[in-house]
Image 1 (cartoon, one colour):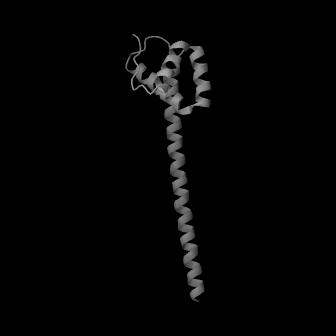
Image 2: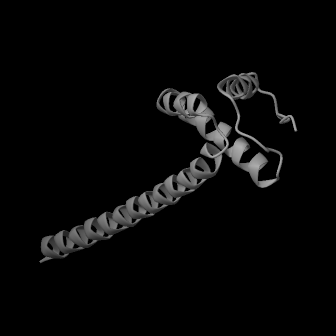
Image 3: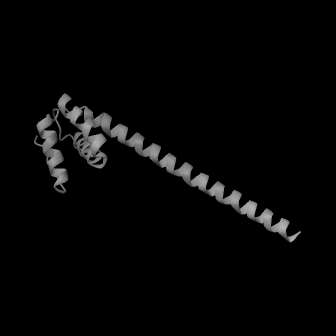
Length: 112
């Protein structure tokens, strides 16, 4: 009798723990999906202001150094939205931006 109660309680605890873990995983998946959508939105904006060669460089960068790639498109998208970019960035200008990011510079000014 006592063993049956213990067994039932153990099963209930295991089910509750499993449900909580599933909720945590689902939340993480939702957060990851939202983040991916935001990145895609930024890419859409930023790629309009990158030359063909710069877009290719961004694609390679995204595979090798995702954090730097995301930071670069965030800066480009922000500059575009603020009206600081009037024309597309060349590959050389994009490389310069990446160099500044990797040097740890806090600010990058786009030439008007």
